[in-house]
Image (cartoon, rainbow, N blue to C red; front, side):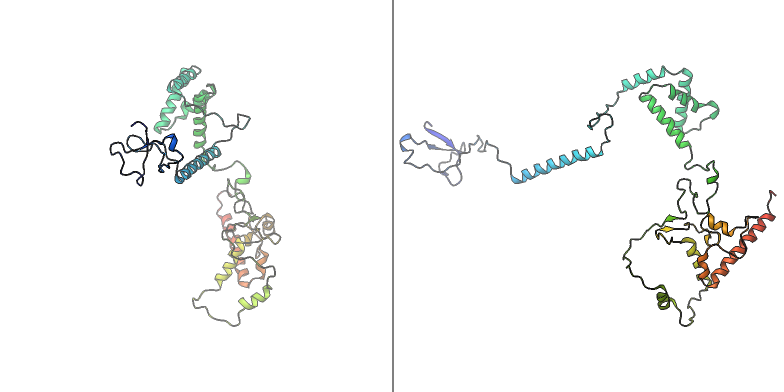
Length: 350
């Protein structure tokens, strides 16, 4: 095969001369004398291996390049999310991430425990172990054995290491869970009963439902109120003025609407200077009779024997309502004074 060179042949070039054993063809190398005169056939110059496969790697396709870019983007996003979720560094000073603490081995943990136990007396270790077993089994602790006091003593005596921190955390957690949340009562006159304006009815949220607090919007407004509103008198004459008496088909008593007016004025009292504020509590506490705050209550009370001023009520807005509303309010007033008199008669402490 002297003077010949191996080249890859395509299906359309030199097919008859294809060597069936090696998958290559051999063509005669041109001499120096006929390089310029004799044109060589166009062949693919990619070298082939023994099995007829290309030994040069193919260039990456457009799909592979896109996949690599997506993989790099996802990796960068994962790194960003990890940095965002990590706690803020507080001990480095330059804003870099804190080093990850290594998990302690069993040997190092045992060495720490032995070192810590040396600071405690045998009696303390025995009591702490007894308390641990009882707590794990869900048994009640005997206060006469002062197990909690031994735990406090042990936590105070231990150095500030892993075991000491875990013991302190366990003690604080047990003490916190043993307390009621919220407590049954506060040792203050302020929380013995709710105030006149509805405040201090909740230990955790003293202003919840109190008067002079904002309304809570639960429905998204569908329309915006125009600047020029119609005259209320015109609306009343058009929509609510009754031209003639018509019996209701359901035979509903008019007393229902009198009582409904009282309930509405009990729950809603919009501040005229700021319509976002309610000047009454959110409780159905008969504030039209007794008043929405302490100043209104003082105007209705007699400050004697728990009675209120006869045939009167605190809510002045109801004076412009139909007489039936005032009649019901006076009935509530008289019933209050009647209950006061009856309670005084059966008072066992007098």
